[in-house]
Image (cartoon, rainbow over all chains, first blue to last red; front, side, top):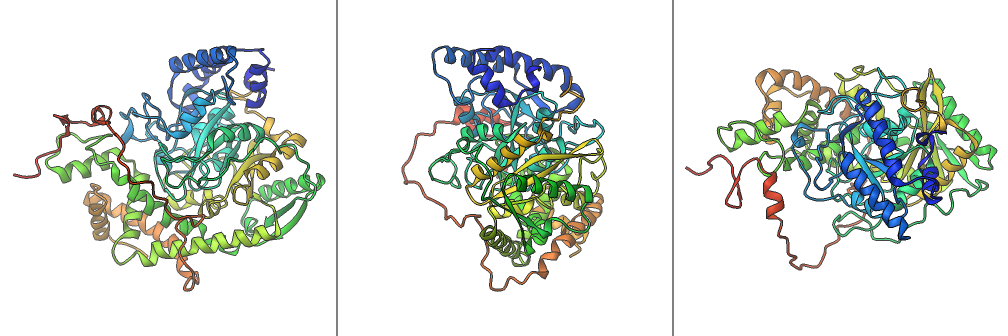
Length: 488
Length: 95
């Protein structure tokens, strides 16, 4: 078995057993990035020199017995996380020249756990997109079919892990940006409960929805990564101050006594029958392991896409007002006055989709429209949250499809924003409610991976990771790798 | 709700985005598509519902009002396109 075919957990065992050094592992993955990423475009920046130095440090610490949870494991960070001394572009021309003066808390925590950063992954501009086609650095390709999208916005992280160019990566999820690309590339990804992972140094899109999480080959890998990412952070006022959970302890716990809820709204008549069937087959596998499957109802989730496309753009229009061409980021040439400097710097620095969302958000917050749009959307948000609360009275976890379709061709939806927005129809409600959810591969359709989503109750990441791990012990969908990269 | 070109230009100004008259026509169409989709919210009965701002209904914590040294100027100013004498430079504002 080649090194890249191992999961992160297995690589950790190889490091712990002294079978390989971090430096060897890091050189191995850097060589794969060099070999494959020209075609895949999953990295914006490869930090080879820094990675080798971090690997040497990890090896030195190991020889002294100072072995952090992620000691020596190479990972990639989505280019939305600030990394000190390394360009942090957020997929935008606006930040093409931005060398962050500080590290995001997630980056800092994972580094102190011993992780080695291979580089920064490509993404939809400011995380706004579901196909990775809005990046200033060009689209990422899906390693399962290079003519198709990897999903988005964490498309670079997903493609890099799927093609086995990195054993794991970080992502962020505002409306499905970890789970949908995970589903479209056949990997496992988890969005934690809102407030569990610090947002400090993670470039803000929609602050009440954004949450960082792990992307890797398996649920066990995600548990390992998440353990090093969580914790209260004084620098993020939305970071929750509560005891840290143990995500690794109950991974193997049997599923007897577990109740799995299937929401009827996640199986509309319009859903691809093959996706519906493989989701139901996943439920049957959980039943075979002793779980009970019940039907639940989430009547308001049909309003989650409209509510999201008010709330997220409104928060984005506010967050992105900081990009003014004055303090950092892109500045237009020869501004005639301050207003011209603001307007042209922003219009030349932001891409089309980002500008559309800023305009929608500004409109929704403007005088006379606030009640009709923003306030109403926030009320609908409570309806959605209440639906989930009722469902969790009947079920421990909720199961449904992650995405209504498998990876679609590059360019297929690029000029039709509303159709593109529907890619996140099953993932968005979870962000509005702030719940944790995980996507894992559960089958193949026409040679392309399809994923299912497990939604947990607040702070029950341990439970969805346990269910996913048990599923992955009985199946091998998460072990399937694309011919491009994965099998080479 | 459909919006027209004039509204697009007005909102673009509020958002400090440069939008030409030609671009505003195409944008009016795109933004109207999005707003029409969003209009589905009007079907929800939310009269008695309180808005939800934070998923866990947590209020904003405040830290102690204690000044901390923040000598960041040397790290932050080099990020600006133009600076001089420890200040950001912008086009002349006051004649």
